[in-house]
Length: 105
Image 1 (tube, rainbow, N blue to C red):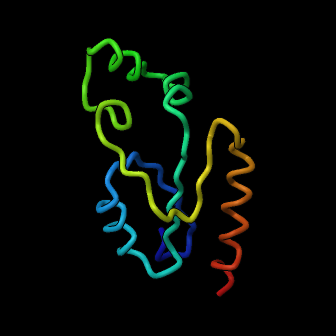
Image 2: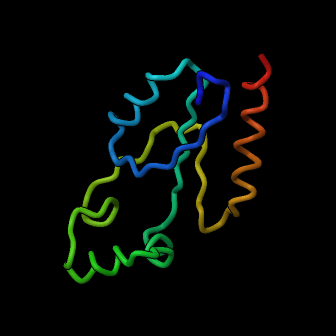
């Protein structure tokens, strides 16, 4: 999609910096934007449609990223948002504003 000139947004829970750095290297400089949603665990749990946080809290599952499995906070993401405080439409406006200069070839 990127090769076709389409801005592509992919959402991943990617807990390790080395993995995110590896993906960044697949793109030309300035074409990969890391977005860190710095959202408190309580907010994530309250929005969990599958109930994974409740299951992890009860000990029914383990290895939940950010709960009992590690998550390495990105040191220099292009964007950082707290999804508790910032509405999605505001996040998108900020992201698209930064993308405008990238699209002018």
